[in-house]
Every structure is written in C-alpha cells, then in structure tokens.
Length: 325
Image 1 (cartoon, one colour):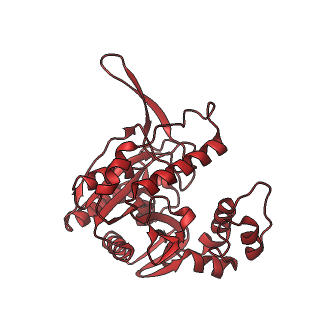
Image 2 (cartoon, rainbow, N blue to C red):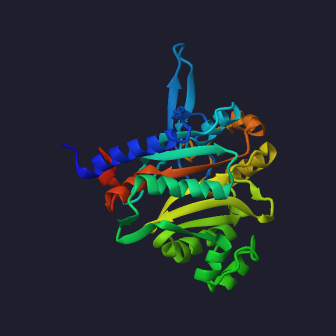
Image 3 (cartoon, one colour):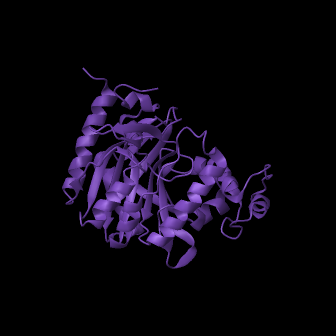
C-alpha cells in the first residue's frame, strides 16, 4: 500500500484533470528535452545531448517550464490547454523545492487577470477542502485577498516600490534598509519581498499578489492602464507561493528585448565559458509564434506544493514517490 500522501496526490491529479475536462480544456504533453529551457535569470537548467542515428549531436536541456512550447500550441489554434508537466531546475533541494517536480500549467484564450484569478480559486475549491492547513498555517478558501505589489510594500515594508523604480538607494531609504555593496534595485526588491512581504501572505485566506513592477514583467504584458506595472500575479496559500501567472505578452519585439536583457544579466552574474553549459540559443520559434497567439492568460502552479496542502504534510518529499534528493 502506498503512503497516504501519495494516495492523496493521485486523487488530486484525477480531480485536477476532471476540473479542466469539464471546462473544455485539452490536456497536452510537450517535449521535455529542448534547445531553450527558459530565460529566467536565476534558474539553472540540466544539460543533456541528443544523438541522431547518423551520429549528429545536438545540445539540449531539460525544460524549466513548458511555457514556451504551450504558447506555440496556442498560436497554432489549440484553444484552452493544460499540462501536468515534469520540469527540472538544477541546484535546488529543500522542504519546498525539488530539482525535479511537477508543474500544472494552463492557458485560457480571452481571459484577463480577474477571470484567471476566479478560475484559479474555483480549481482550489474543487480539489481541496474549504479550509486547509500546511506547515502550521491555515488558509480558508471561501475568500481571497487581492493585493498589489505596491500596496504590499507600503503595508509591510513602508516602501514606495513604484516611486523608486530603478533607484536602489531611494528604495533602501524608503524601506529603512541599508543598501548592500553591489546591490541593485531588483536585488533589493527581492530581498525586501522575501524577508518582509511574503511572510505575511496566504495566511488566513489565499492572497493574490498582483500588478508587479514592469521590471518584473517576465512574459506578462504591461497594464494598459498603468505602464509602470505588469499584469502578473502570484498566489500564496498556507504561507507558500503556489502559482505565478501572466496576462500574456504577444509583442515579439518587446519579448525579444526582455530575453536579451535577461541573457545579459545571467551572463554578468554566472559567467560564460565556465557556467556549466548554461548558454543556449534563443527560442526563435516562440518569438515567431507570439504575434499569432490569441490574447490570453496563463498560469504555472506547483502541483507538488498543491499536493502538500491537500495531504497536510510539511515536506515536499512526502508527496514524491521516490525523491531525487
């Protein structure tokens, strides 16, 4: 007999698939070994190699998210899609992080941020009880808090995150922090976020942390009503970050510029020749597809953490059949 947390995970996966099937989604499965594993600056990919029958060798990476491939399917007219994808992120391993884990990712053409938030809450209510406890934190799912990043920084750090955008010294002064040597605005932003903001989120009720500064837009579009922020949110339940979502950017030129900036920053931080093979080609197929992609919203949810919440366990390894770390 499997341990109860693994049985609960299996029931959760079945309920998740039923939720999406009832709403007309198609489940997809995209390649795991790809030429471009992602562009997030601080994620490290696992490198591998494909050997063709003629002996030709191609450098590949295990993807850190199925996002790029799923967007190409959207551009080809897939309609609403979801995937329970195995993903890999090197250098990770803790009670909340496994180097190999499952990502629940879905995309809905025509949705904006509000509709995606409502659907995400419907999923949680559909697959979890009305009140959940994990890692000593209880969260009710009958209600959710919507909190902008700017308001969260004001409330928990006394800082004006938008008024100081790009100015590390001003953000430090606003938050009452000492600026560390070599620390830029983005570094300080995340230090404050992790130390002073996130510990207050997803306690008592779920929290959607919305409208991120444009510098953290990633693959989200800027808010048409306020170009200082992007239409992005993160979800916190039981004090844990559970999901990251975007109203998707479809401007290929802007996305290329963002990728180039991410690559330059990754190179500056982690180097080149001795970086363990972390240089890869840009995903030109994705950039070519973006102008054909419908207006939509998408979300990546950590399924292992969702299973932790469902099973009420404190360590991700309890919901992994054979933990790899």
